[in-house]
Image (cartoon, rainbow, N blue to C red; front, side, top):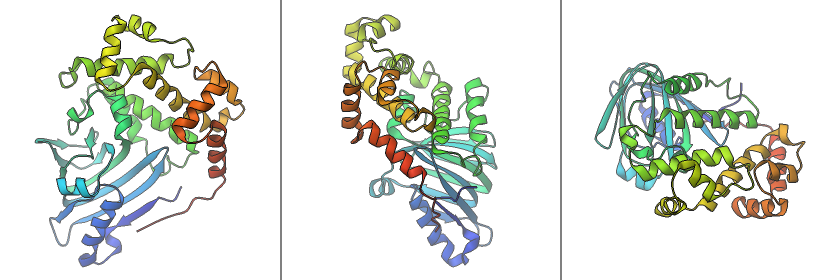
Length: 327
């Protein structure tokens, strides 16, 4: 089993110290805020956080506590993440933007950590929290802030698949090569995107849902060197003028979105040791660049290093021993 990035349990410290230390722990997990313990004798908590692909996953237990992240907390210690939460045991109440929901075992919910929220639980609660960068979430879901702290419907097959994937996350499960972690992380992100039906009333903003469809299409066609705005417009059954207008309103462009998708896929391939047998020219071809030199230039500009240097850095990191950090 891999060592956690850090771990903490209130039982490791005297009661009069544990509350202060727990607040510090929350700050380290990027969810700093005010803690109120319901019982001097029976309030307890623990967390273990592990590196997982490009982000982190935390395994939490809490009992009889109230956690509030205020606007001041968000300003002083901003977070650029959303969290996908899967409840394993117990129930609790989450509130954000005047929306309140009670979550139970088996529930999946996403929460915008960029905004204030409160979390109360008077019984023992055990849950998994997977952090996803906000920029990535906005590429998966047209308007994620509108579905933050909204229960995903359990009857949906995609939500069932997402919940099943989250349920398999354990400390032992994250003990995988980094490329396997990234593949599984991408799998969860894909399920999250599919679990949020863009035809739902919450996501009926036409232009944002169209942009979402554009990005899905680009993920399907990024490997085609001749993929163009006209081909995308034809697939979407809209005019190229409308397509350009939707991109413009989102302060983006076809070229920017396609390049982002290709660089993202390049990072995935260069992070996977199974693709080390591929030359840079072959990687370039796999992601839709017709000229390897163009791929190298674009990748270097986006990532601050060449594709070869990116692969070499990953290979060097894999040879380094893991270190445990704890509170």
